[in-house]
Image (cartoon, rainbow, N blue to C red; front, side, top):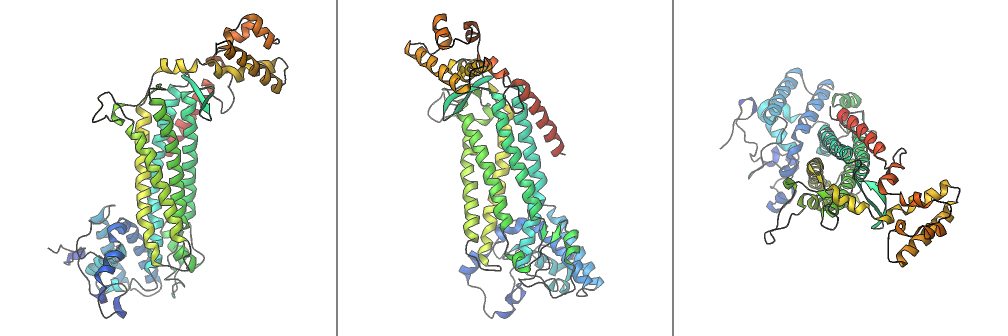
Amino acid sequence: MAEAGIGGAALSPGAETTMAEKLWGGRFQRPTAAELERISESFSFDRRLAGAEIRGTRVHAHRLRQAGVLDAAELAALERGLDQLAAELDGGPPPAPAAGAPEDVHTYVFQRLLAAAGDAARKLQTGRSRNEQVALDLRLYLLDLRPEFERHFAALLTALAGFAEAHAEIVIPGYTHGQRAQPISLGHHALAYAEMLLRDRERFEQACRRLAVSPLGSGALAGAPLAYDRELAARELGLERASRNSLDAVGDRDFVAEIHFVLAQLGIHLSRWAEDWILYAGAEFGWLIIADEYATGSSLMPQKKNPDALELIRGKAARLAGNLMQSLVLQKGLPLAYNRDLQEDKPALFDSLDTARDCLALAAGVAASAGVDARRAARAAADPALLATDLADLLVERGVAFHAAHAQVGRLIAAALAAGDADFRALPEAELQRFLPQLPAADVRALDAARCLARRDILGGAAPAQVRARARELHRFAARTDN
């Protein structure tokens, strides 16, 4: 059943058009082959660009009025149609396509305006090509998503900073090469991922600034043959400037690849964090507790509590990386200017945006709800091997060159292992003096993980005071960027 079109005209959003009613159909005598129609339609995915298409069409209509292509009445009719269509969509995409849907979002908006404004809509392609329309729509769409992504970044930063502040003094082993290395805290570990997230957020912001360029007025490839103020059009769109080369403007997808990279790098960071927390929540580590809301059980083994949320985040990173590669390979070898291959940029881009948004939200939930088993952490942090570097540092404070101190501590640890006791502090006082004559035995025996951690009270260090200070800074930063 046909629905009432805007302006009272009856036209279904999915109504079939004749070849003459297509944006490009005048030269063709026979309809497009069904198999080509199936593979070439893009409305099923580019319909989410409708809001951006409406904005671009509005600005283009005003520039056509300035150039004398539209009269005042025609512009007013188009404005009314665009207003009503925008209100109908209310910021969302048009309905999912059915049989006979338009081939793309540009045709969809044209058909709706044709019903509302009549022949004025047919003038809209003057000096304009779908090549520039889709390049503009993608830029506007990505910029519209920026506030939502800022909120997701802020939410995860807040969750990580809150976890870090709460657990600044929960000492755990830090690792290099998968081996226990030096004491750190759970809070310091969480802040490492907060720093990665800050860089991801900064990259997203910088990518958005670089893509805020208007291709409107570029035409298909050579520029519009009109008195068309492109800089004014860019300002009306909220963009920083107009593009400087029409060939580049319609064929450029650098900004798509850059957004893919930002999201792929974000995915890699979230995957690394998920991997650490999966390990820390396992029985072999056990100092992290994933909330029930973010875990699942086994259909066979009743005792299981699986960290599925973290595993899914880890898995989604592969998807984001794959979409980045698809974007790069898609552009390889394309001649200037526009080629239909570029239709394939949108499904992967939309998928990455949706995937990254969902992963950020899920990660924030996991981080905000996670618990800690302090006793399990304390047992792991009691490993005396974690104290070796600090023992060498104590020798340095007594005037021993670090290279020599390193060798002295190494020999002490070897002797303790040979004696069957990994805790060098338990060696007899005479043995301690033999290997470490510069240190009183009491100083060696007093060394523990908490003291070692407190010694790292330097900017960016693992000392609890530094962790809490940085967590407070991140809280303030997240609060500012969330507004």
